[in-house]
Amino acid sequence: MNYYELLFTVVSDQDYQQDLLINELSGLGFDTFEETDFGFKAYIPSNDFDRDVVEDALALYHEQFNFSYEINLIPEKNWNEVWESNFQPITIGTQVYVRATFHEPKPEFPYEIVIDPKMAFGTGHHDTTSQMMQTMLEHDWKGKKVLDMGCGTGILAILAAKLGATDLTAIDYDMLCYKSTIENTELNHVPGVQTICGSKEDIPDEQYDVILANINRNILLDQMARYGEVLKPGGEIYFSGFYESPDLDIIREEAAKHGMVYNSHKTNNNWVAARFVKQ
Image (tube, rainbow, N blue to C red; front, side, top):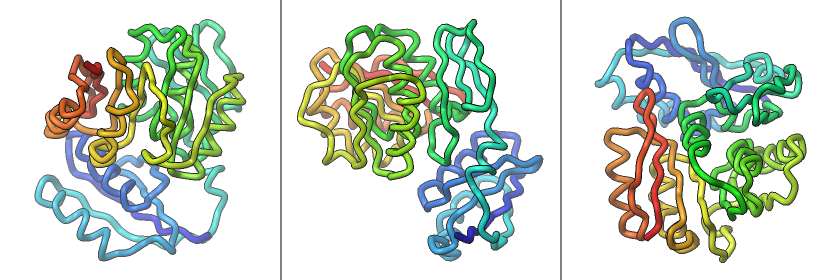
């Protein structure tokens, strides 16, 4: 498959502004991103690329900061090899070590997660994922029934299992993410994760102790009512995939309509991971 490459030059001293562009492009079907010295590269299958749609979506950001991009058609290549070549291990404090199959293990970390780095979102490198993991480490997971929505690579479900959760369901609408989660739970010897390719309509009619939802603001708002239906009273829901301003207040207002009350949040580069509790 041929791809289009958009080579961005971003003139800004605020890292989150580049993230704004990446987040917007992700919603348009761009599935791979590489950082450069002056910005980043974004890739999309040639059949999914619409120049006018991209220009319209990015027009607002031209008013906020300076950036430019050039468009190149890239012949077919092995994109998983490209992705693997850019994958580096990460650590979450002194407790979690996330690595690929081709990296050496580090047994000094209590929790090691092995991710086969295909082009699924959720390797732990993004602020949203790493902050979700930091928040998870601060709470008790023993015996919990957990729903991971927008599971990506399955990394959050895997961590929940390693922390003691015993009943897990992981859902993503993307077939690549669905397959990636199955592969990665097997790699990490995490048995019994029910993995579903679907969306809010496919959430089982059960009651969960904890919901993990690292997606984006618009999808979270769309799915909020369903979360309220399946989260137990006293249960916790962890949200991420959005910005502190203005998104957090919008999420708080919508969650409150469904009985989920804000408790606390972390922020880095304006990205948020927030914890709510069901009344």
